[in-house]
Image (cartoon, rainbow, N blue to C red):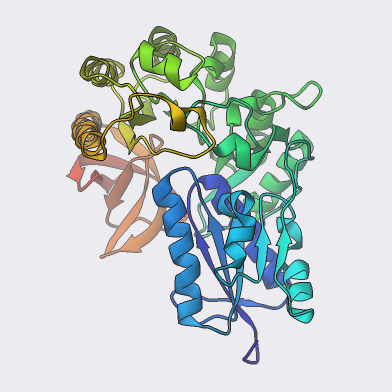
Length: 430
């Protein structure tokens, strides 16, 4: 490695959990004396935290690994995360010095140093079927306003289309006391909003005695200086009357919930092996909307699942209109080897899946615009995060971007919403 101070660059693909894991690894490098540089700069070490949720995510992960070595052929390359867990041996062929999957990330610097010292390629990947929660920690994140707190790892749902349980392992939960300690560190560093993240957040605490998701929420809400709390995602079956009622009593909880849907057709939901019906989903959505009037509901919609008929697709779009989402993340079905859906009959042509995705995205855009128009004329508390083009930009409690002149990054200010701005809102500070 060259230079007076060694440098490290990170590329993180995929979910908020990966963002947290990358930050935890980055802090290990910083503690070891490294300086961070952007991924498009020359670095001594490149770390790519990979994703395999879709074929596109997997392809991009490999592309970024190759790109790093093109930028500096003498660099040490680290592959981490889900693709590393899935295809560890294959990644060695790309010139990766260290492959670390979804465990041992806290030892990334020591493992890399050992691999370099011995002039070898190291694969630090093991079975994750029965392992404890890896105690990763962070003290900061990009920006000075919002931080992710990882509280849970793994999933045991085994939905027909999803590879995540195979690469993330069984459910492991973080102790509430440890969660509270990290929240206090982040609050002391100036973060005012926390986002609880996990691979299957709704399963938090099932492996702990006497702990549940609401306990983790309360542990963070009890920390002075934290003004806002968000849940990164919820399963519909977790939004029970008792849970929603308990959430509504915590003033820091923001009126924005990502409630995973995937399809609005009962037939497709059964084939996906999702554990709810459209009616049950709607009941959970209405519970949240009653407890948090005007809340923003967002969701994931998977189109083109094997055997999805025109009627089922139409049912799905009609259901989305009925719920009234503030935003939808639309994905065309992506075959993942090793999952039941990969071998299901009725695989749809790529062109048809793309066409349905375009139609669903158009609906999402329409629903989003309608929801944002409903906020015009209201007064919102905005947590400002940055100054861009002479305007302060931040997010409302509903996680809608708001632009206003005169806002200060890191401050929560009252804003009168006056209109739409791009995919967000604009307003004047009161």
